[in-house]
Length: 300
Length: 229
Image (cartoon, rainbow over the protein chains, first blue to last red):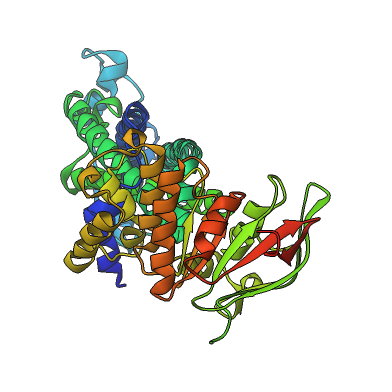
């Protein structure tokens, strides 16, 4: 039997074969509800992972492509050193642009900390030069050596020091999201295994009658597997829809809100949750099949 | 006469430390009719279960259609059960399915629920006198109806062998006669029949209609009986 036929048989089923297992009523609803709850949580775990991933990428890319040169020099030497630094930077391979920040731009940078009335001209504020790198980047160690020789007051900050912990934190958050996703899948498998085992135990007499009339284990297991797979799929689909609605109702991404308002799906990410019912069905299929195979071997 | 359909060779079966059956050798030839008798608890049901692979012998060999059950996996044993119809005293059914579907169960599990087979089902239900009860649920049936339904289910796949374990245990004499008649008819169609019963009157009634061999289980062994019947 081809994989396509097996898949079709699984979902379309054999109506006659499905009837051999008696309907289980309330417990069936509990299985579906549990699958729905797990899928709802899985949507959030997925949203967390994807948002953390985006954050890690953004921090990693944005900060990796820019660096800052800080020049601290006496006021009468400042202009000379800035010009020297810009010359060095212009001839450094890997530097795309280098631009000394204007007084207004420096004021804007400091404003959140010192307020709008900061008298920049009376303070010994270092001059900042913003550097944008090419895709290849520059040799930071080589540039430092050249600057030390030609611009004694220059300090190169390539953001490595504080970029790494941020990216690491975001990566761990992403890992946490995926771990949660896997744990949810594991919990769902455990729950369906218990439900399937209970159903198999409760239907011991049915199984004994089926064995008596020549039913093979694959036939008996199939009746239970199909039932639990469909419950897993239906529950997970309902939970996914509820989860997506809840994610949609979250505040939209804003610069001020930072990470919290960015929790959700963007663009093609919206397609990822559609896999949750399929994964739910696959988990239910595997868990029930394993439970049924094990249980049937215990019976004569 | 062809090879034995069921053969037991020096078979023993122990359970819970005690030996229930010991050193049993027997061949059931195609088309033969056997009665198996003996007191309650002698091991008739155990013997029958050995004959269709529901139990494995603790010693010796059981061969179904010339193949040792020990060499069969669970699927092969299941496939062999389609060639061996079994009727139990407590004939179990799927209580949530109507009688029609219960009788057709062997067809269902073997994937043969097509129109031709369903036509046979109607004939079969008429043969056992249950045509009008097709939609009844098993708990609604009388003891006799359940036994006849179990027999119909046992023969729907046209098996080579029918094993009936105390099929008349819960029914009156008239119904027992009817059931016996059905078993004799099956035997005349060439089926091998073995009936476990402690009802000697049933055996006497059968011997007038069919050349039956009577076996007795006593002291854990199977022996030929007959002179005392």
